[in-house]
Image (cartoon, rainbow, N blue to C red; front, side, top):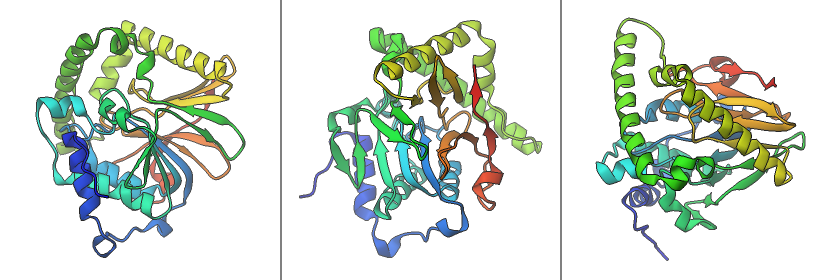
Length: 294
C-alpha cells in the first residue's frame, strides 16, 4: 500500500522513490573502485545551500560498500521549516542512496536532531533503508561499534532547544560566509579550506566542549559493552582510543567533506574527500587520517 510521509522533507524523498525506476537508473561504475566493507557518514544537511550534494554524489560513486550508515542530520528539517530549499541535486542524493539499497547495500539511517522528525519512523523501512534509533556494527576483525548521531550527549540540545536554534542560525551564517570564501579561493586556484572548522579549533570553549563530548560518548559505549562508538553531530572528524574504547567521529559533509570507512580487513579510516576526485581510485584520492591513540 502506498504511503506518503507527512513531513515535507520526507515527502520530497518519497517522490524520489516513486520516480526512480530500473529503466531510468544511471549506470553505476562500482566495478572501477575498490569495494569497502562499510561507509559511515553524517551531517549531510540536505535541504540547505551548504549541502555539497555534487561532491557527495561523487564520493558515493567512488566508494561502493556493503554497509552504508547514515548517522543523522541527513535532511535538515530545521532549515526546511524556515525556508524551503530542495534542488534537483538533493533529490539525486536520495535516489543514489535508494539505488544502493536496491542493489544490495545495507543502508541504515540513524536520525539526528536536525532530522528528528524521522525518529517517529524508527523500526520501519523506507525504500529499502532501515530507520533505527541506534545500531551496532561488527567490523571484519570483530570490534563491536555502537552507532549513534550523538545529540543526546549535547546538553544544549537536550535542555535548551531554543538556544540550539539560535546557534543553528549563527552557524548557517558562518557556512554562508564559508561558501563565499571558498568560491574566491577556487577562482584563485586554491584548494578547499574550512573557515568554520578553523574557528572551532581556535575557540577554547568549543575545544573544551568537544573533549567532554568525546569522553561522555566513549564512556557510555563502554558501559553498554561495546568496543567502540561511531557518531557525528559535532562536525569534527576524529579517531582515537579513550580509556580503552575506540571513539570515531565521521565529521560532516557541509564543512569538511569527511566520512569514516571500513576496509575489507576491518581497518578504519577517516576520509577527507577532494571534490572532483572521483576519477581515481578511492584509496588514493582521499586524504586519510590514521588511527591515533591517547
